[in-house]
Image 1: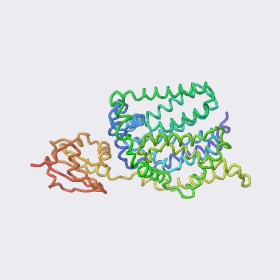
Image 2 (image 1 turned 30 degrees about the vertical axis):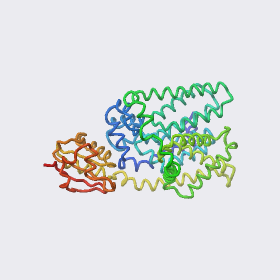
Image 3 (image 1 turned 90 degrees about the vertical axis):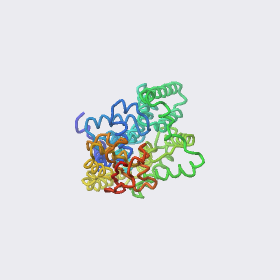
Image 4 (image 1 turned 180 degrees about the vertical axis):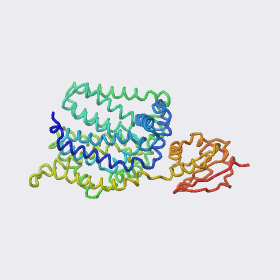
Length: 478
């Protein structure tokens, strides 16, 4: 194959979308670290590989992601961009992944429009630049959806095994993989239930996925126990009486606001229209009997009714890219029937996507220098402390700033002993979040399992503040 025949216009467009996706993610890549990101590093990824694999004291540990963060920060240093590198690479992989899935199910034009939307959607940019496992979960979701469609055409054992492995790796990242994987396996059963050989391989793939998942979680099961993984307080069902009329409604509204944030209203309407067109025209634009979107909706609804999860916007992160695919399919496969001169409506849609993405890219790059060096209040507080701490000083930080301040102190070379509570400190630095109504200097000391009577809290001195973080200097009581 010659270079000219390999480099097609479609591949050129896809390369542009991937490059644009990278550049759109650069401004946030080195921005202020959030609470969960900082805790991922401080609590799990900064100690040892075994610690990242085995410590499931909190579901904040997205294990496979934490393992990759351990390697990226060990090799590249404790910097925000290194902390976020695994999430970034997974988020970038969604762009060609969505193209391949769109081309496999519908057409190259649908794949390209999906890739453009995946590169540009602010919500996916956010998940790609947060050191959490959500972009990886989305990537494994696209992978198993691709393999599922492949298996309806060719029942190769290799693809069944890859489906099991992709599912297990998704679970190893986040137990939320139950939602996309369960929906896909249900859809495969509906599509291939008449063939005995298909059912047996389906059953074997599901069993292998379960066995691999258990194997991956063995270190965590051994050290933390199964209750920490599947029965911790963060995944317990919400009280039924207030769930459907308050919690779920609120969470779904918040999720929709997150998905459509910074999107033009016209684009939001178009995407919603495309999604429903894909459902209505399913039998005309796709070869399968059942829409995967509909099967997923039923599966997820059953699980939500049974489990009553909190379902914050990150809960649905795996669903964003597939929804963009179905929206793009409805628009493109409808527009392909319309011609404007020499071009079909699908080509015009792609032209609009390229123009819109180029404009978004120009705006984003203009703010890159300022965004790259932005300093948040926890980082500024940590800098102040690092310049004023004495050897016997103790730092006590109230939620929600504690993990970020610890993270930035670590980056500045301050040992972890500085923020470990102890009663023999020479001086105490207390960092209070003034926007937390119930937080006081007394509550910060008590939360650190220290006796407030040990400190001269009435004589506390407000030394400085950074935004809503107030820094007090307190001496021991005499």
